[in-house]
Amino acid sequence: AEDRQALEFAASRIRAYQQKQLQESWRYTEADGTVLGQQVTPLDRAGLYVPGGRAAYPSSVLMDAVTAKVAGVGEIIMVTPTPDGLQNDLVLAAAAIAGVDRVFTIGGAQAIAALAYGTATIPAVDKVVGPGNAYVAAAKRRVFGTVGIDMVAGPSEILIVCDGKTDPDWIAMDLFSQAEHDELAQAILLSPDAGFLDRVAASIEKLIGGMGRAAIIRSALSGRGALIEVVDLDEACAIANRIAPEHLELSVDDAEALLPQIRHAGAIFLGRYSSEALGDYCAGPNHVLPTSRTARFSSPLGVYDFQKRSSVIKVSQAGAKTLGRVAARLAYGEGLDAHAKSAEYRYDGEER
Image (cartoon, rainbow, N blue to C red; front, side):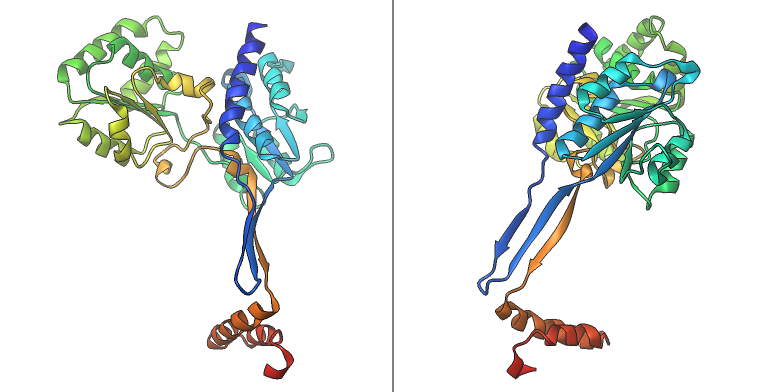
């Protein structure tokens, strides 16, 4: 019962946040009666891949499916492997709460192919979202173009900028929160306070032994972890923009003052109480975020990923004359006579 309540609470917050992202159709009318606009429509069908085993995360089901539902997607298809016939009850509960329409027990690259091309039993979808292993990621790359995909995500990342005044145990645990995902995860702390970096290092050694995934955390921290002294917080922000992390925590007195300096990050957590873990589960914003420096040019998964936009053009008779002259001139210049004549034919009779 408590698990269900937690899932429903998280779903309600995700839903409330995603509703703010809904795009609306719009249009305007010009003086001559020509109407121009944009029509926003949801995808007909989306496919959600959910890993099995250790990486089966009900929270990801909520993040993907609730977002698609808010966007108005016609049908949400979920695929998930069931190794040894074992089902993950929390994953299925999350699917029910989020409004998934159908679930198929298939996983791996073949599941991505089934969603992209369709089978006798699994319908083809318009877009495939959701995390997976290297084979799933490779399959998503392969089918892109036939269907849309959310992103090909790399290992998890966290970058923390701290002024040295946050409890070092908190910072150590925040670094662990990403390091425990994967031996290739990246966990970096930037601070102008060298003594604070030493205290965090001590907290890491003190706390790591009690972690269930201690070996994974140690491997990640030794491979892609760092505690770095910076000149000041401005330099820390410049480094953060260079790294363009998936998760960025600004654990400082006045995080809002630093926010305008941040240009590249998947999710930005402001203040000492905004732990990355809250964003992963129930704060509301989506936890499907760009990794591997792709935050320089891409965004978190959102309602806009399940909507598409069509241009709307309704030209009046007067507008056809004004626009036709310009279009014909440009078309002749490009050597496209049919384009030019198509525009000219819509002039009124005397001018042709």
